[in-house]
Image (cartoon, rainbow, N blue to C red; front, top):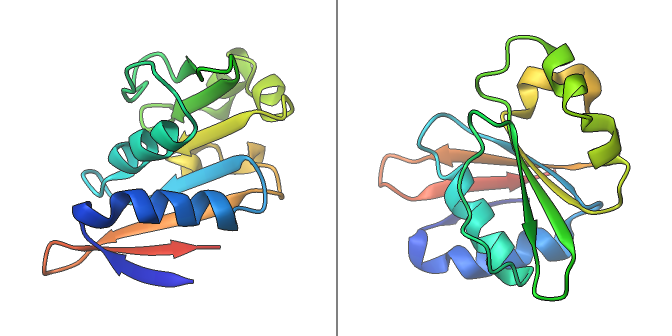
Length: 135
């Protein structure tokens, strides 16, 4: 499914992603500045996260808690140089936890990604809107 959206439609886009996802593992693809973290912030809002959402560029993973005490894990593998770095932070345990795992730059750990996940591709359009593809 591919759709075009702008920032005013972000909440509806996040709802659509959560409702169409085939698992709790969401892979976010897109160039720098495409809006991956912005979309993740909106998804976290819908998951009732009250923590401040920021990209874990240097720590690789941030854990957020919902008002109900549920954990959500947010990964950013932009700066990763070797998949072993992901293994060192216990990536497999996070993925196997059954909790929401929101992963930016998943292409940098391609061999570690589970088959059951949903890929979200964000592309910046010439008009400033975004094209979103969920697979």
